[in-house]
Image 1 (tube, rainbow, N blue to C red):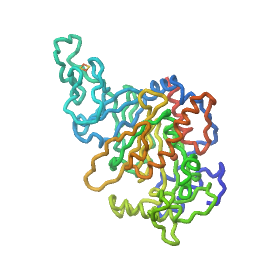
Image 2: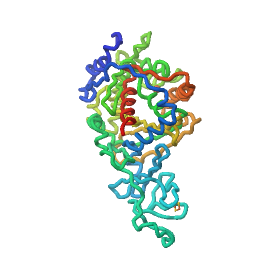
Image 3: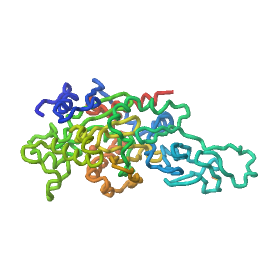
Image 4: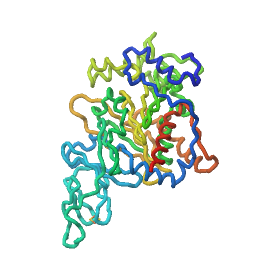
Length: 448
Ligand code: FES
Ligand SMILES: [Fe+2]
């Protein structure tokens, strides 16, 4: 990569890499949808003002489609899982073999939460006085019914809209919402070749962070921070070569791996490039060996293609491009859903923790392809605010990268809360995804 980087090369270097792929690249990676010129500053209050948080709850969280769980989290009739958004409790349940329903997770008698944990049940019986509802939300039993003349025979749990996409269950609290398909829109085409429905959730880890939920997700929406936050990756990662696109309510970044960042002032060997990506420490042998005369990107792609062949078969794996095997293809659907494209397997979700503007939950799922019977989905493992990501060893080398990311976040929140600045500024290209999703946020906040 000798070309000078400036505003004219946005996306061009990534497309050049695709030209040299060993396979024919899918059309979706050839799309380019830059936001165009535009500088953006946004008020600090979007991250610090409880009133802005309240507006988000009313105008966004109570109105928008949001990913609640995977279908495989509730495989059998009676399986249920609580989902909480900004203090609002929802219960998602498989009420029949092919039906998933959702209800407000609250007893209609005096308001106790009905179910606090995932599980399997034949009914939803309130632990306080024992009023019970059927799995379809209809009233089943009221102890001493004679004592409640005001309670009708039909007394269903308030329902919440449900939709599914690619194995994910989405909910919407707005009874008048548009269909989920309208919200997903063109994203469906993007994921048509990457069948996330036929993956199983091998890992699911969450952690509470001391920052606004948008600060947390925005730290995962650009590669601009890699030079300072994850410098160990740069020998093998094309952070500055990333192509960013905005498609309205979703955006993406395409970051190549197995190439060297234009920040790097020395010439790493092909082996050093792959060592950087695989987090090889100095006292161990190379994790992936690059034979003399070969390129790290090709070797990485072949290594992953061979691994993939074990589940999807040699013929299918042979069609997968180097880009799909090596690169970080990171989508964001408004407001908080971040599925990675291709076989990179990661899905993030960010949301407020409780009803707090300055605490959030970050979650990472790993969706693996499988052969034969679908393996059991991993339950959520929650890390507390002071726990270290390395406690979630199942995330592998991601843990050390996440530690680097989340180390910054409370310090950003503190800085913004200090009142020293009124605005934050976003890079016009490399922070395209943030600009795109912030624009969408304000479209919702402004909506009546
Ligand atoms: S609060 Fe649920 S039965 Fe009384
Ligand atoms: Fe990062």
